[in-house]
Length: 282
Image (cartoon, rainbow, N blue to C red; front, side, top):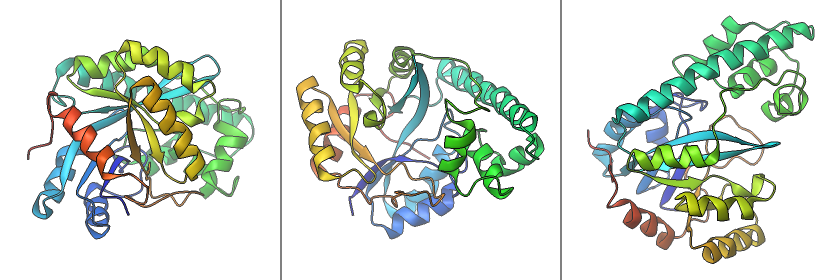
């Protein structure tokens, strides 16, 4: 079990656990530092910091942004930003509004396919969270149209699915700039999911990218070694995270259940020490 995990989600985006439940879990798992990286929102960060404070566990502010490239997506993680920066929060609010419109369009497409689904139920599933495709997928599982969330993406709402809907587009370079302008560090999440990721990383390095996820979830050792070689070649910090959502998807790992070495944890913390918000204070 690693002592750190820099990629976790709560009910403020598409995770299953509240910040308190997630805090309880990371305490049981013995983590010393972590990042709450919900999609398009920092709403849970101070809650999480307050829940962790009695245990001496460090929380760094984080967010995950979805960006588009031709035919695929690139997810950018931001760390150590000033989460009160007005321009940064205005951009996140705009992205969240775009998610609502996108979700409504997906539901309309699913209904046109003859599926008995409703936008109201998706909102109930999401609760106070930023609505995302996983909430639509949970509704499809609940209605019995698919057996799992991955199947929902594959059959219906993935990029090539019949109910896929676009959202407001942002390029990876724009996401990096947004994070840097808020005083943070930008890291490419799970790059191995993106075709041509080495070239993308090299280009983003020139745009100000600081790191890349190397130690990710259930990657086999040979894949970790390949990603680590790329990180060293491009002079990018190798970071890692479980990408924990608590949804029970195949390959999901618990917080800290990744081979993230202490030197990678310390390197990220050192890089963040000069940023706008090195740690969250409550």
